[in-house]
Image (tube, rainbow, N blue to C red; front, side, top):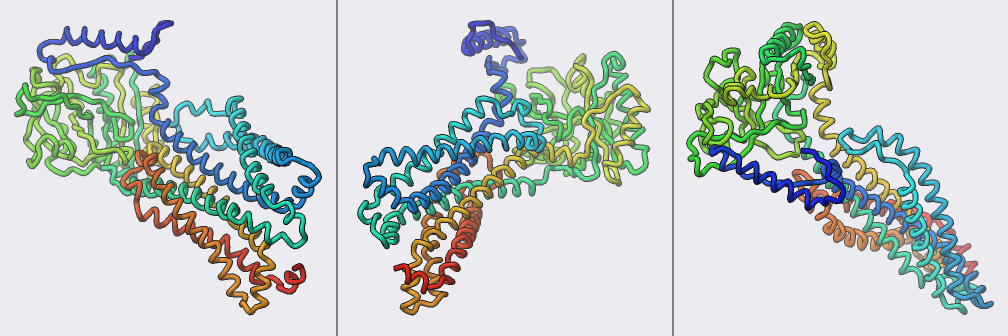
Length: 601
């Protein structure tokens, strides 16, 4: 039910009212429904709409925060380099009376101006990018039309920009001011004073590697999960199949007979078309989003031991299993003889057969709708088919099928099954040619039967599956893009810091070469210096990845959040790219002219 609370009524008060109504309904239950217990619950409609997507958005927000953190470390590295180069200026200003607080505040103000300028530019790019990105977002994402760069978003972005600017500039300026004043004013003290900041530069490199590895590992988990999901058999063959929805107007189809005539005409006409191999009409299909549920009873269960269990049911007309490509595992399919005058029959899914009759064949077993106390006729199981599920990361669920000509009898007299509301359903057809070429055939055939009937969501079955799984694809691609961005930023930062280290150690390198060190030895020495930092960063990144694994474990399918294959691949990729970033400064160090460096001593 959907209701609007009166002014001043809280959710808890509404829940109490709903629960009171539930108990009143149970008091009016007939004896046959005494085993059913219901209770009232209430939830905000907004929460119902966004409940499924909120955890995913939080994960994406975490990924964005990680990328921002990598960018902040990068900027801090550049600000540190700038502060080190200006340490003599800082020393002179301090010598003539400038306070440390003033110098740090000026440095922070410079960082804030840069970050605000970057934030404004980022907002402009975001406003443009959103128009493009929204076209790629799956339709299942709720409230997607409300996504925009509104004043709240702009204020939040500028707040983050200011905070990032202060943090990125404060620490480097403070570290530079800690240099000995006398030493900074001396000529030739550059190398000695810069050595005091090497630990900070090393820490920044380690941090970049660790942070980037966390996001890289998470991306690998999502990619591995997506791969596992795509390997799962959905239980039917989506190739060369077409599905379309419809809803018959009650004015033109007021009775079950008129609806049955429409169903018969659709199946007969489409089956006669060239290239069509199977046609069916059903109240639901595997890609329709939801199946109607019904409680059921299996013969042989005493009424006092019966528990309320639900299974999805599908009423079908025509060759539904052939049209969907669902394998028949045991027994037979429905035939034209399974009508209202024939004994009641059902076909169950493999999971339902296993759950209801473990260790036995389901063929010949009997069941009926509802609980044992209902005087409803029994239906015999004549077949077992494969489980179907879309999306494929959902667990197998019990499901049973019944001929469309028999639901009125199966549910008891006067209850015409799925025809209790506006008659609607799905047309499924399979052809030997590309299903996209069969769309016109389907539309023209329906137009001949009812020129005013509009079909809904006419599409190939494979396309419908893709739309259902689009959110997982989108989330995986987005997090992978974030991981790629973090990796790129880390590589740029490592390259910049290592290049600065090489420039600061130019005199040391020249002395080593003057004492007989070969250029290959210099390159190896510098590369090993970077490799040590990368190894430490990877170690810390693995610890962080294990901590983050608890957050993303609920979004994974068929893969552990601590999969060693993913961790090994992420570490290997991080190390290779980081070493590559260190290789260029190392080669530059080995190709330097030692004479020029020695002359500056």
